[in-house]
Amino acid sequence: MAVENKYTDANLVANKKTDAYKVGSGSEPFILVGVVTVAAADDDGSIFRVFASVPSNAIPISLEVVNTAITGGTSYGFGLYRANLGSVVNATVLASAIDMSTARTIATSNNVGLSALTLGELRTLASLSGATNPDDSYDIALTATTVGTAAGTIRVRGVFVFN
Image (cartoon, rainbow, N blue to C red; front, side):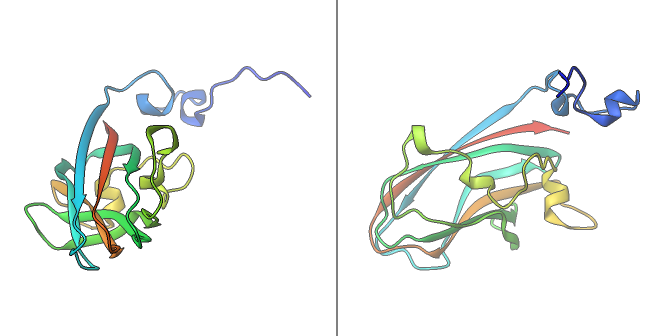
């Protein structure tokens, strides 16, 4: 088998425009951190808006979740909502069926918040919204399909770059 020495972006190889974040030459990231406090009395269908008014040209690179064990909290989704407490765009476009019933630590947080995306899928929030005329910004929220029966805390760290 041959030893490879090549660029991984076909556009770069063809001398076409490419995005800096795709070829490892750098894009300035911005990081958002949010904390959700789940109460034992919260109902299924509760919407926890973790990040408000994220520009629609932002590309999510990572959404790491750290949480305490929330008894019975077996299904949460990450999705997009219209800003300013607006309507749902897609409640599970970033992730679905995240189980919060077992605690996650920083060491085990991985990237469960983007589990609905494929490996290497780098798309703006505008593209992920599926809208013909996307909004200027979106709220990123956890929606509890099965919220659980115990109180708990969920911390989310999102890493984004701009397109």
